[in-house]
Image (cartoon, rainbow, N blue to C red; front, side, top):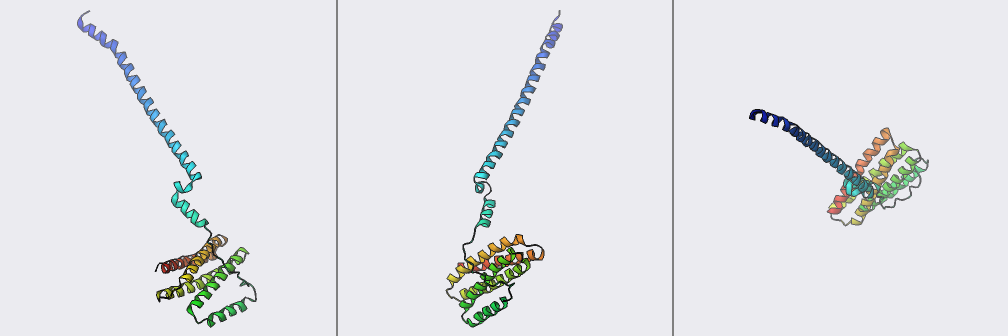
Length: 221
């Protein structure tokens, strides 16, 4: 056998070894990629599981903004609302309104007028709650709207007194609590309404938000 035939024979014998090496390299690469993919999937699953556990144990650490919003909605404002007395569906209610107006016009002091407006507002928002929860939705919504109008008069009057330099901080603090309580009740009554009544409550809620901002601004001054 000459040299050329010998080299050809050697190359043929080595070819299967190269093919085997290539196959092993390809198989190892595929296995490596598969292992990396599986590891990533496991880590992702563990991360999701950890987030789920944290969200149950401490929602604020996972979703701080949502948790803060939920907490704010659940807070009950500590403010006493006076007993509404005779409700608007009672025939004697007109006598009550006449009595209230008489008290109001006899009060020549601006602070006293603001206090009466606040009292009328608090009684009416409480009456609205009783009416709506009792099934008299439309009348309750109208009463709630009137309540915020009285509250608006009180807030504007006290804000004006503050700008004029009078010390009415105590009344401002009361208005702050009252306006927050009104907002709490209105949000609770909204799901009990529909259609035009729902729109009216939403509009009243917007007014309430504005009033809260006015009071907050006056307290900062």
